[in-house]
Image (cartoon, rainbow, N blue to C red):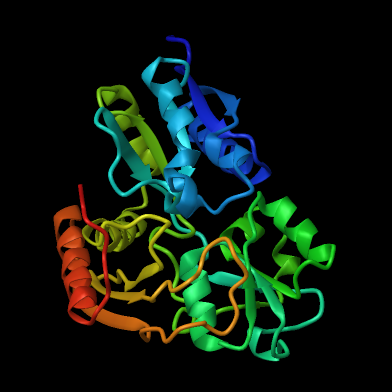
Length: 323
């Protein structure tokens, strides 16, 4: 009898990233009988906490060190929150699978108030996501929005210390860490359209590791994979990164394969590192679009996303140049 396959997972060392890596580790051990170890790493994205990601290189800062570990053979796979993964992977790397998605919605977290609507005028809300900033501003232009960086525990601590009246976080992360009790309310997707890939885990490997591609296929959840492929195609076509206030979210994926893809783009104005109050200059309204199609493969999912991106641009959304 052959010995079990030994593999190493590269992971960030935040509590949420470690939970995600341990989750994949357990599945690989249970379903494939592999022997799995974790390689914890600190990324540039974890180290730079005084500036917004859009100012220092984007969310790819969370994955570069993990990709280096894959490239030099220290690790066999890396587990990512898919919304942190750049739209195009570097040459030589591949997305081996997307796992079943957790709750993709945004969560309202506050020690004093139950919903965004309950906040008094001028209340301070914390988030460094440009997407969340423009969507919050569309709902409540009378609020102050302040940057909020750090891992999940750091963000909650800053709320508890009184720096903010409320903060907005991904519901999936709170639920995965057993912190669902901190959620006061969950935003409906119609109010706070999620980010592309939010709530989904993706596993990255070297493109030449066919053994990993074959084995990890067992963890793939195709409805989730097709959904996030369509969402990420919107961002890719818009030249998207975390420096773009863009939301994209799919619904459907029923037996008939019909997917509806909603997207929104907001004028960033003066959003970013500084306090944002009722906008200092006239801003374009949110551009919201929707399209649906039967999606049964990755190509159809990408086509749907590209059509939605074209609708956004037609509506006035300004993308970034794609290099």
